[in-house]
Length: 166
Image 1 (cartoon, helix red, strand yellow):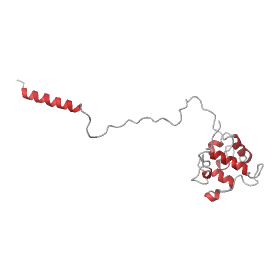
Image 2 (cartoon, rainbow, N blue to C red):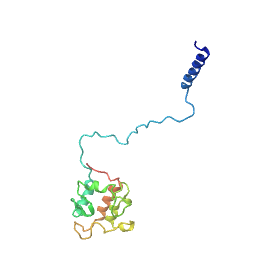
Image 3 (spheres, rainbow, N blue to C red):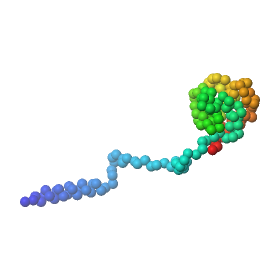
């Protein structure tokens, strides 16, 4: 026959195990956290069709057009730098300088850290750059070199965060 004591002992053991599983978790390994998606800083744009390329604002692009694009345009722009209206923004903003490796050509909001401005002012050698001041004296252009007002126009654009136009 069935041993009643063994059956009762088995039922008590099963009951104890069941109740132990229903209590609050004690010390032990923490359950793995599920990462919570973070809200992005900018709203996601619907991937419809690509918009127009970002452009340097007209008053700054005018400086490039008058004094820079004779050498820095087209597929083989001097030093690989293309400053025509469709490509200048992408070529300059947050792009590493090939002549001063620790600097960007344009560091938005940081004129002193923007190598382009140093090249335009002729202070590029002071910060570890090389080559000649831009534009090269007498190479072409209305002025042969940049006026203080033109350099200031570019400096203000960089200081304002190098905003783009579409």
